[in-house]
Amino acid sequence: MAVLGAGPAGLVLGNVLLDRGIDCVILERAERTHVQTRARAGFLAAATVRTLERHGLAEGLHRHGRTHGTCEFRTADGRFRLDYAALGRREPHTVYPQQQLVTDLLARYLERGGRIRFGTAAEAVHHADSERPEVRVREADGRPGLWRARYVAGCDGRHGAARRSLPAGTVRHHRDHGVTWLGLLAEAPPSLDAVGYAVHERGFAGHMARTAEITRYYLQCERGTPAGAWTQERIWDELELRMRTREYGPLHRGPVVQRSVVDLESDVLEPLRHGALFLVGDAAGLISPSAAKGANLAVLEAALLARALTDALTRGDGTGLDAYSARCLTHIWRAQEFSHWMIGLLHGPCGTDGEALFHNSLRRSRLASLRTSRSHQDWFAEHYVGV
Image 1 (tube, helix red, strand yellow):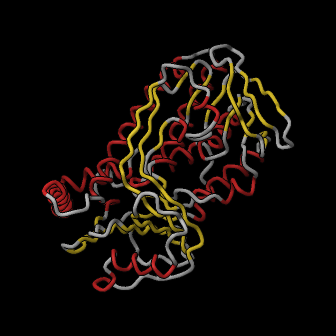
Image 2 (cartoon, helix red, strand yellow):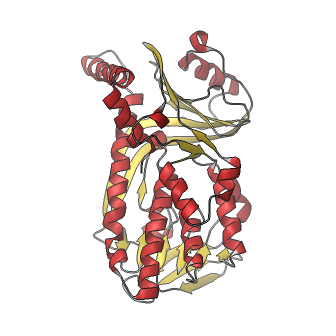
Image 3 (cartoon, one colour):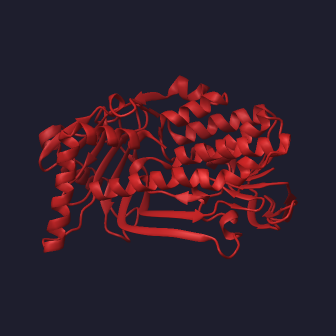
């Protein structure tokens, strides 16, 4: 088994396969230090935690993660909180930075004797319609290389070799939501004991705790804004304005140590199986960060594929592999629908023309319903945590 990519999807898949006695190799284009330090998501759904527990991969998150079950909305009409862990299915998130989860998964994979090749860039997958597909790579020393395996799992993201190798006829569903965020990582304690969503006429602002010393912030900005365009002072001033700190208290300021620009897009491929090649995680579908679903979908898909591969390779039962694409797409589209709803809730059109006023009035009504309707709150909680 060849696994392309050492993110959560690839490492969960590799660990589970090794545990089932199935030989595999992970091919990762980055170096180990980069893999273990790249900051991504940090909110794990209850179903994700159960999956990791079931496969003996949750020791680190139980030791260092913390449960979280509250979000706060701030608008021109005031603020309100939802204790979503007590609503819907009564499930919390576990806050555990993705780079720490990846470090755990990698350590466990290597302890089990797993093979991983860092600095090895997969360039293409050939003969996926055969029983002996090939992965053409560029080795760490620059030499070309070739790996052969019975199956290939593309866990290498939206720009990886797996997607580049798909046959004609693959359907791509894509939507650009027309919204851009500055993603910011600050060396500053959280300023709220909740996830903060600020809806403001100047644009959205978000607050998400990562650790006791690190906080993730988001600021909506104009499309095309460079990551380094805003000074740190402007960033903090804009965060405080949009999060209405005059009414609700100041933010804990600190150095902004990481910046990125995020264009909110949705992207899904169908099908997710092409002969011996399977798409997993961001390679299967890209989802906006507005609903914290990306890493959770990746773990779910990896676990489904691991079970199907185990059945096929140990018992000759290919039923799970045949059903893999349809099963995953059910979860992916459910997550996409909620993400789309969240984008509409948090962002409105600018201007004072009739269309802008109409859509912003609808958004205000949705927020009022979320504030007052128990059935709406239960629906939110179930979809906010669920995958």
